[in-house]
Length: 116
Image 1 (cartoon, rainbow, N blue to C red):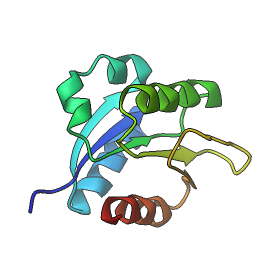
Image 2 (image 1 turned 120 degrees about the horizontal axis):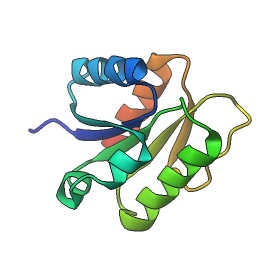
Image 3 (image 1 turned 90 degrees about the vertical axis):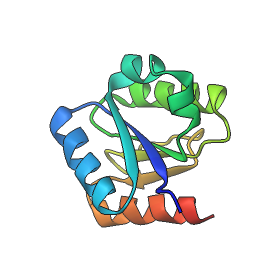
C-alpha cells in the first residue's frame, strides 16, 4: 500500500523542514511549500493527489484562514488540518484545528483523519 501523501503549507522554513522530517518518519510522502502564493501556484495535480493538507501556524490568522478557505473552495474533498498558534484561533472551514505545540497531538490528528 502506498504511503499517504500530505501537502504541507508552512510559513517558517525551520518549522517546515522539521514537520517534513516528522511526517516522513511517520511514513508519509510529503510535498511542502512556503506560503500561500507557493501553495496556490502548485500544479493542480499535485494538490489533487494529496490525501491531506496541513497548514502551519507561523503566520497571521487571516493569512492561514485564507489558505484554508482556498483549499476547501478548490479541493473540498481533501481534509485540511490547521495547526493553531493559540487556543482562541478558530478555523471553521478546516476539518480539524489542533494546537501545534505538541507534535504527538497533531500527528495523531493527521493519522486519525487518514484512517477515517
